Length: 110
Image (tube, rainbow, N blue to C red; front, side, top):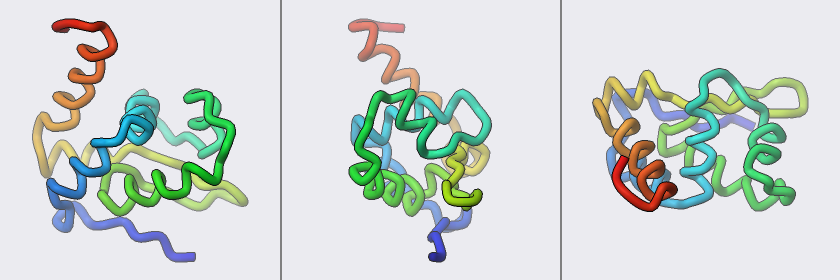
């Protein structure tokens, strides 16, 4: 199965914002922002999600929106945040969104 990963130049703000606009997908991005590659199971464990099938849609939206990269690794996929591409295309966007999640979580300003 060929996975669609838009190039940096193909990233569109509406696709990125749509991908980030869902609480589950935003939680995935927060996990991946710690750096490195995570397999799908590790992300699900961190988030406390047991139903893998419900995440297939979320992985696709994040991948096709240019937010993550999925790479086959045996029977699993490794997930990586495309921070370099996002920062180059939309400087400060990812940091602002992640800061917003911390504000919401804390219930007030950072």
